[in-house]
Image (cartoon, rainbow, N blue to C red; front, side, top):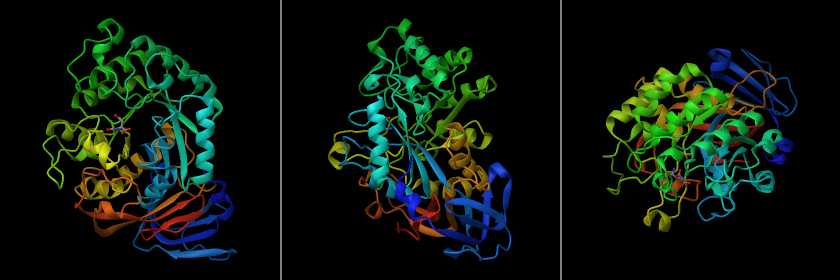
Length: 434
Ligand code: NCD
């Protein structure tokens, strides 16, 4: 899941006097954090610097939180390396304070086989700077027909969920079989309840779909309802990706007690509505599309009420020519934390503790990823945040290869100033240092 170099190079670090926030352990106070041999050793006041090879870093006035996890990113390798690679995506993640990401499987070839998973593990081992996990396609080639050998992935630690990414699973019967198979591997299914450019609800009958379809781009809640009802009797965990409509959130809220249902929202669906124009006067093109102010408000409410468990960027890099020809997607690894702190935490929509819960604790729990906590013994994945740092989004400074970010020019307050992965400082003060 990580680069073996990370384990070889790690040193011992003492973070002094930071305000530590770890929701899982009810920690919200000023403390030292000691990292020895790549793991959290202790969390207590006035730790004595009496260890060999120890770097002491004064983090007074800063927040120290479990390493942030983005469970929805596209690193585009293999197949679309002109947009992003495992290396540039890792650098982009570390700049944004993320110690861990989960990749979507819509690469070329797609991640839909044991061979593709093993290739991914090898590439991550060679080029990853952070912890990188992956989802595997629900169906071969994400075409919605033949289910992948899901049961084989139960023993792969790098595989944390199943998803056809931008393609919805159109046929109810295929989704039911997929939920049964995923349940055996004890990993969640993470459906994209969107209308893709490739497969339309019109391609199948109402009976096959399991609902009566609405017009294009308005079927999210239909898929959410169908998949929740299918999962109910099977007991498979379903994690809904990037929800965008009030109707979807309302239904999840109603069915929450059924258990085994979690969901995520992106910063763009939390902050922008369909009337938004970027600095060039353009409407950001993304899937699902930006919605109404009523939907935006409902997603924000879902976040503060706890219905939305996770904030994930859906980092979807595209080249300029592809964007010009209409490719949907927004990049987010380098802006998500700043946007969340400035636009959601500062105005009091959620607390900093909630932000950590939704960007570290909950994704770790949902995808059974080690991390999400600073308990002694845990791998030392840590993010240090300066809540007071003011900065302006500048796409030209990004480590990502792509520039499709609708937040260019936004003034933000709050940024990651250190990203520590397995006890290694990977990003420090806005520079990759590993
Ligand atoms: C995704 C991408 O670019 O891979 N784009 C997006 O707008 N979210 C695919 C998708 O989910 O449609």
